[in-house]
Length: 98
Length: 160
Image 1 (tube, helix red, strand yellow):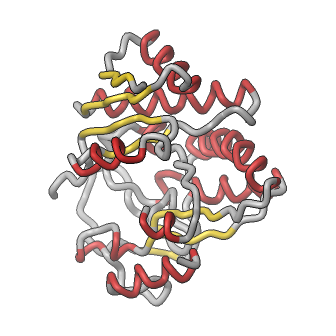
Image 2 (tube, rainbow over the protein chains, first blue to last red; image 1 turned 90 degrees about the vertical axis):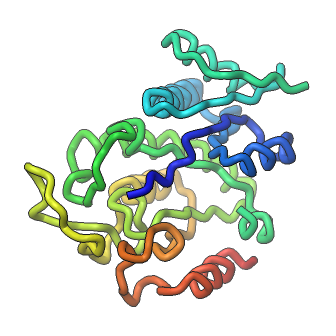
């Protein structure tokens, strides 16, 4: 059976803030993982959910998928996710946004 | 996505408990395989944290809608795939797997966590005709059998 998965993913904290860029990636066949806003969550919940997101991304990378993280300097949760990936020595492409 | 935007919904992407628990190199699962103590515990923990994210939105007056995946043994709302004999050496059970009128494991745990958190919500799952190749779409009354009807159902449910 044909593999229907995207094999290319972008990770973004707020897709509305970067709507056109996200649409552009989607037109190129990228799937999207959106990092939720954890500001109202407890520290434990936020850390746990980010850890699970890192687990998912690790599985995608293991499966040979291309992962690009979009981030601005203000994206607190994306920074924390990237720290978790970095501690696992997982290399993902990062596109810095102004 | 277009339907959600047309109906003025914001999207909160839920985690995929199957990917973080079993990885991507997994066979097609049925409910009985997902219904293990440890997978359910994984879903329950994720659901509790996720419900905690939804509570502030509910407090602000948001209409919370859970969108599942039709007949998924984990994300199904109306029906889930089942096969009580499927274990051991893999064998083909055909494209039109058995389904039953129950929810998947992840949806069950999310429903439980949201109720505990005091969040009221509505649920629908995306009809299989929009998700799977024709041979895998069960012909059952619970789901629209053609794409146009399936889109119409989604629009009506979301008020788009």
